[in-house]
Amino acid sequence: MAIVVTKEAVKRTAAISSSTYDAQIDALIADLTPVIEYTLSAEAVADPELTAVLSRSATEIIAGEFLAQRLREPGATEAFEAGSVRVGESPQAHADLRDPYGLMRRGWARLAPFLKPVYAKSTTRDRERRVTEESMSSW
Image 1: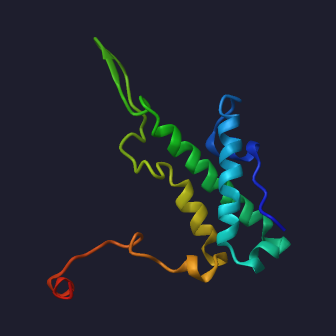
Image 2: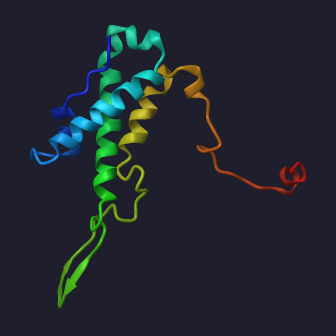
Image 3: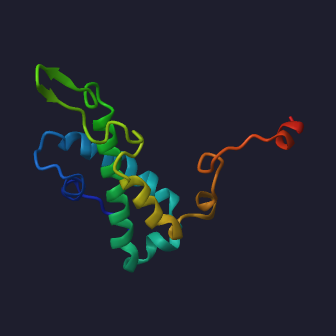
């Protein structure tokens, strides 16, 4: 059973009600769903009982990517002030622009038990990097 991600579910998760971003959301679904599905074990994808969990996780990841892209657009985190009136920046302006709402992190965390072993291993990208004298001696 394949992962099912709908535009409506992504919009609901991202709290988007207009159809302004429909094409962008459709493109993200088309781009990311196969990538997410590829990282999953064949047993998880084939299990019909897991379809809802996998689909919800993929929806969160795609909604998180959509919101991160919107926040990275020019002007999204800028403020304007005229006299005593201030049109301010988004509350997420100082958040991690890769995942400002934590949706992608939550989606991947939910998928963690179902990932192929090669994708389940942690990498140095996910850990804090520490440089010590001992580690530098081997350079």
